[in-house]
Amino acid sequence: ETGVTQSPTHLIKTRGQQVTLRCSSQSGHNTVSWYQQALGQGPQFIFQYYREEENGRGNFPPRFSGLQFPNYSSELNVNALELDDSALYLCASGRTGVDEQYFGPGTRLTVT
Amino acid sequence: GQQVMQIPQYQHVQEGEDFTTYCNSSTTLSNIQWYKQRPGGHPVFLIQLVKSGEVKKQKRLTFQFGEAKKNSSLHITATQTTDVGTYFCARPGAGGTSYGKLTFGQGTILTVHP
Image 1 (cartoon, each protein chain N blue to C red):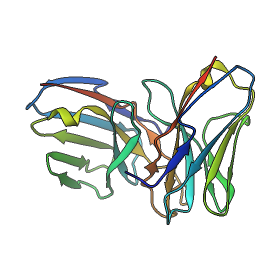
Image 2: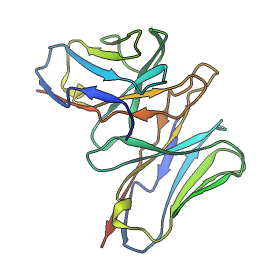
Image 3: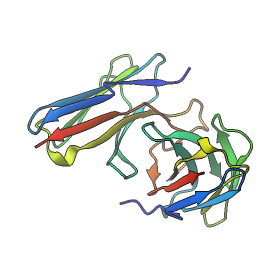
């Protein structure tokens, strides 16, 4: 198992609400990336953080935002939740110069 | 675009049979990675291939990277029930500052019947 942890495990929210998901990176890793995995699909890259700044974003709207803290932990914030935001949200940590990613167990978000 | 196409989408095998999944890109890849996701789990890194024509083995798993670095395959010999899961290939983002910004294929769901 990786040293990447995520909280909470499951979350149920109502359309229009806001949500914050948390991730603690593996020791020695300095990048953190977030992915959205809809049921039956491969993970989709949301964004990556490095040195506490966003370092690349996938095709996701601005209502998806994040933070990286000095201890390399990270948050994913989603505003104005929509039904299609229901998915497994995966945090992955890595190191600069290395492509392989180590995923956490994910947070299952359900929007009703 | 920078998509990777993976086939087949599903594969059902009897325990002991072999399994192969293929990953194809329209553009040359700097590397290709393979991940396994067990049902209800998260993607777990298996391997990264970098060199043209590279072949790597992990016990019953054989990974290949094409000569043109546009395709890759994962072959499992004599499948076991523990091999059940979804196998994804993933390509990195373009550019020197894009490490880890992966684009995943659609995955191949492997079912093994005992």
